[in-house]
Length: 613
Image (cartoon, rainbow, N blue to C red; front, side, top):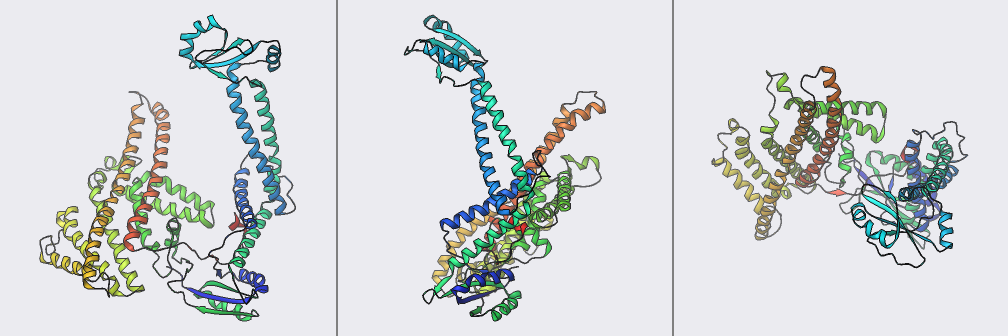
């Protein structure tokens, strides 16, 4: 659900704004509107420094796992000093890596020429003897080398399978007309290039001592990054505050949760020389959004955040799409063995992470793994092996033969659920009469699903009094049609309503058909992953020679199975994560009437080290 908000308008002396912002930060409950803020050059430098601290935190986490880390390194005195040394060392390391890459490319280009003396080349040139360097495709060189040798003093240097490298001894200014690419005369040989590479790598390793000192100051570095973020918050608030009374006063807009707004009121009553107005948000306000869900729905909030937060005053769809997302993930992965691997990964992540996004991701992986295991057992698949061969007495669901139509049925069910939520949302926000048009479409789609869809899944499920030729079916279509055509825009001319209704009919019919067909991807992705798992099993078994004992069979099959199923799990998990998300954001959100808000509730507060990392 979306937390209720209270709107505040503050009026205070401009000279008090800094202290006022600090008091609000200490309270940690008020989000100040900073819409329209344009950063200055100094502000951009502050933003770059904040981003640099975040990159430093990521770098140090990886650096601590490497061989160059020295846990006994002496820390810097302050976080600011540590960041300055980190920034300088990072810039130097980037330059060295770029130089090493350039030298490695140069060494590769020089290696075919072998060992030679650049000084000797210069000495020969001073005596009027010019060495010119060429390369050519080996086949072309073999065809024409005899003719070239008759005209020029040609010496092969390196004849590889694909390329020939050779030199021509010529006089200064002599034209050498051969069908080959002339190369620039080298300024060093590959030995010197490799020596320069070694020297650069030594300098790069020398920076590990500097990075180790930064790592030893990691907590102070995190504190300094948090301080910079607080400074940026203050800059944004002061820059967007509206001046009044010739700059003597400033006006700010703030937001707080209604359930904690009493604490905000208490601070404002005690703070001197501040006037505030407290009111409820209006539809025209850019109200920040905070979600407050139960433990299950909170796990899936980050999925919804990948699209957008719901607009304030509408409905948070997270609790409603979360069960569908779990189901869709299990259908797409569709293998109990793969689900078991994902479950072990999720449990390991739960053990390693105590809070934050990592723990949320761990619970997400665990719940999706449970769904995968349940659906995999239901359809009888374990690492691509059909469980019906092991347990012939158990009747498993025939995924390949039956799930195509079930995928469409699940799509219709979620679309109908989304329409029903849309009716409820419109009723709560505007009134029931504004939801009659959507209700009409809900009745039509539901009637078609019951009369036509159920018999397609199973003829025994046909409703005797509600078939495609029954009066009840036509009555439902008539009721839905009247609502769609005449009540889609209350208060407008009936002829306008009919016109809009006919236009909506075309758009909705094609749209709903397209939406339902999109759910075929559940069948396609689940089927493709299962087929690939079977292929890897057959491939591993096919490489085993006939008559091999168990040891030989295991030595041959295990590497193939580990690599094959590893690749399939990786690809299938990505597909199982992305495609249910697509069905949620496109098909379900559209039919549920989702409205987005790009602003999340972010109160001024004292930032912790973990928030800076």
